Image (cartoon, rainbow, N blue to C red):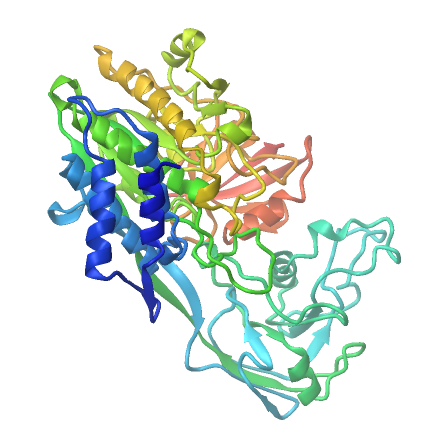
Amino acid sequence: MSDKLKTIHYISQKIITQKGLCVVPKIVALTLFSLISTCLTAQSATYLPDADSVMAHVMVLADDSLEGREVGEPGELKAAQYIAKQFEKAGLEPAGDNGTYLQSFGFIKAIDFGTNNHLTINGMGLQLAEDFVPLKQSWSGSFDFDGAVFVDYGIKTGDSASDYNDYAEKTVEGKAVIIKRFSPSSEENPHVDFSSYSSLTDKIRMALDQKAAGIIFVTPEGETDTLSEISPAFIAEKSIPIFLLRNSGMEKAGIELANPDIHSIAGELELVRTRDTGYNVIGLVPAKSDTTIILGAHYDHLGWGTPSSLYRGDEPMIHNGADDNASGTAALIELARHYSSQKESLRHSFQFVAFSGEEAGLLGSSHVAKNEQFDPTMTRVMLNMDMIGRVKDQDNELAIMGTGTSTEFPEFFETYEAEGLKITKKESGTTPSDNTMFYNRSIPSLMFFTGAHSDYHRPTDDADKIDADGIVKVANVVASIADYVDSLPGPLTFQKTKDPEGAGKRRSRFSVSLGVMPDYVAEVKGLKIDGVTPEKPAAVAGIQEGDIVIRLGEYGIGDIYEYMNALGKFRKGDSCQVIYVRGSDTLTADLVF
């Protein structure tokens, strides 16, 4: 690290946190931004991405004062304002809302308890949170049951006599059921694989299939009496009350786990969906043509730890996301300066987009790509940088994904070499990152990625592990491809790709694939399809973009969690009927995995 960057780092630690808000003394702020500005001063007519400048950006974005840049939180807005300031200093035109660099989008931030949550069991009034917890999937409203049916673990693996079935010889239609969480002992049931049936999602679906009118979850002895967090953005409300009766509640109501006797249940549950606002940051370098080359990177991360965090410590910790994805954002800012410094020579306009909400389900990029003002026919290519900060640690390897999304790409990459990098090419246009939203709009799209590592989605992804020189190398590769597209007399020819498995940051845990890209922001019952991969099961069955899948075989699909739960039940070669909605029609097709 240079002496200049050491000084920047020292001063950045002087930021004072007061009541959760970042307060920077004027003299500290002036000194810090003066040093950054000096570090970022153009060296020549055409600015070239610089390692010290990259590191300066990463250190600001991955500082504890931004508290992990979670979408909808103050740290996200601080990061957005920093990026907007850099775009302004680079000379980019604002391309967000109302003549600014910021483009807002709404999303479901949380599902909270309302004011009307009360429960009485066996005549004993219970306390919210302490004694019972409504599940986020629950219906809101009043209920009154004359007892409840205990169905042990609430698991049913099939309809034959040899299958495991906790509902056997029990009538639950129109009644509340008591279900133990987790699964039975594998020692007592050595021939049953409970892993595909033990989730709360699967147990809720099974209870609904049995026409239960309410679900009471209880916790087996020796297990933790708390619920894991799940992302509220993807949860569909069910049609019945669902809650966890905690151990303290069972004790107060005189209920024993071995043989739970509940003779009366009455109460009300109220869950409130809280909406919030996230911000993309968009700047434009206009050129001779209105057609656009888009360069992007997401700047949000996991805050103090969202449901997708892999950290398992007891105390919350800030997830700074230096590699994921302050690294890509730093490169984006540097490339914005690079192209702004040579705007007179550009054929096409260049748009630079720092996306937010990627970690919450591609929220920001979905908003851009589906915005009614966005014209995909005017976009030549989308180049996305996500986790490009560990080049040296990854043996100088760079994965470029999406090389099959244009018929022109194979010829270009056949002879392309990058100094100091070993390039791995993957054809699929479907990745777990923002480029997928543009690929689904039939835009040639590439993602640049230097590999996963043990700090991924953990608090240890910090700036001290960043390879700034490596980021510059990747930025130069991105610039080479952007220059190539800018030099072409006509547009690239888009083409769909095959086989998205194994691409990107996250590995699939499923043995089969439907071959679809879910619409993560659609608020519908079912799984809305945002893209279909050619020759995959969904495409062969006739499913199209915009369809809403509501059933796979015997498994109802109400949201993405139920879809993933159902997918885990199938193996290669299995077949089933798929039911989906297209417009006002409900359609059925045969599907083979």
